[in-house]
Each structure stands twice: as C-alpha cells, then as structure tokens.
Image (tube, rainbow, N blue to C red; front, side, top):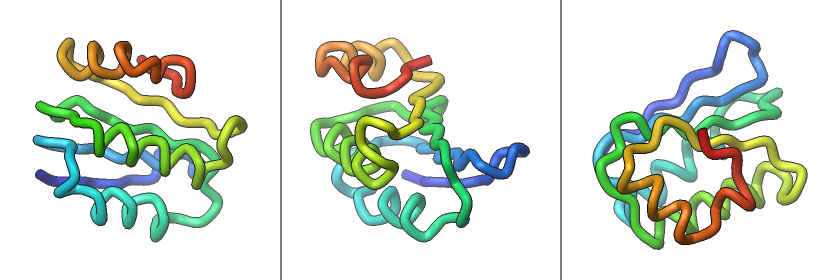
Length: 101
C-alpha cells in the first residue's frame, strides 16, 4: 500500500494516487494526503490506476474527502479504476457524488 500526492500543473488540483489495497489500513495516510497537502487546492483527483482492491472503509474515506472539499460543491474525480473497483463504486451509487472517469 502506498499513497502518493502531487500538485497538477494547474496548481489547483491535488492528485492522490493509491497503489495496492485501498482499505482501513490506508485511513491515516489518505487523510494526511489531503489535509496536510498544498494550499490553494480547489480540485481533487483520486487516481486508482494501481489500486487492486477497495472496501467499505475506502468508500467512507472518499466521503470524508468530499466533506472536507466542500460537500455538494466539491470538485473531486475518481479516475482510472479497474473493472472490479468501478463495479463497487457503481453498486454504491458513487457516480451520484463523484465524477468517475
């Protein structure tokens, strides 16, 4: 499990990349990634290219990020999901809350 962050070229987008399992063991690292990140961030991208597994605690962490980023006005996209992760997000109706690409 590894969580990497980087500021996109626009200077306003924080990209959070998750490698391996996205579960309760990543809770603190995921939270630190956006709470102690760069100032001036207005948009978040959760990059799941290398994420192999996602569980209900990960769904809760995504909801905490949404609350932190402004709730209904939050600009968050979840990108590069594999088919299994995409199915979990779909079953959970997360496409109603996040832009899933």
